[in-house]
Amino acid sequence: MPILDGKEQERQGLMETANLMAVSARTAPKSGGVDDILTAIVTGPEVGTLAADMEKMAVERKIERWSQQAQEIKGSEVIVLIGVRGTKRYATNCGACGYKSCEDFEKAEKKLGQDFEGPTCIFKALDLGIAVCSAVKTASLLNADNRIFYRIGAAAKRLNYLPEATLIMGIPLSSKGKNPYFSRL
Image (cartoon, rainbow, N blue to C red; front, side, top):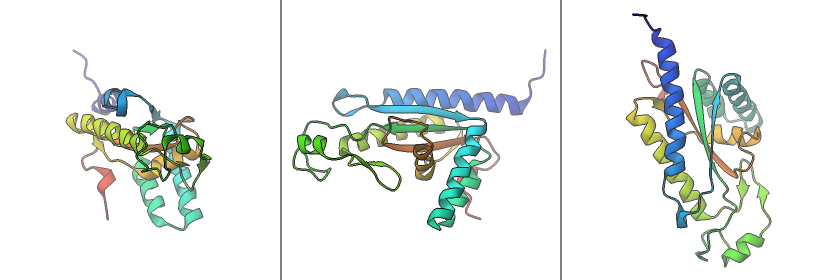
């Protein structure tokens, strides 16, 4: 009977976890049953590229926390990205987007803000939140270290990792003795 290397098995387990997280995001409930969720899985050198861009953003914005979080994700085996086409409308005229009607929202100029594109339909933002929560629930059930990162999503947007997404969140995964994403030392 062969002896399987534990580190390699952990790496494979994290990849399987990431795949199942993408399924969870896809099958999460959506407003009106309209699916505008997008997913991607980042591995290998692209994890380092995301961290490097977060480092650049730390310098540009003079916010040390960007750099700290970049350090936290460098050891991640895989990062799950979940985004949404948030500038698409959901016909209910609720006004949460800041416009009187969904038609006005749809006609509004879509533009890139500091990190993401807007305006954003509140229902699409809610769909993103539900998809992200479904994905991290799956990671948690499989005992994978994880955390939702706004800053990973901002870097992924800048790097065009999910081209159609107007808003992105990133979820790094690891299997360490201590969850590296909640270290505040």
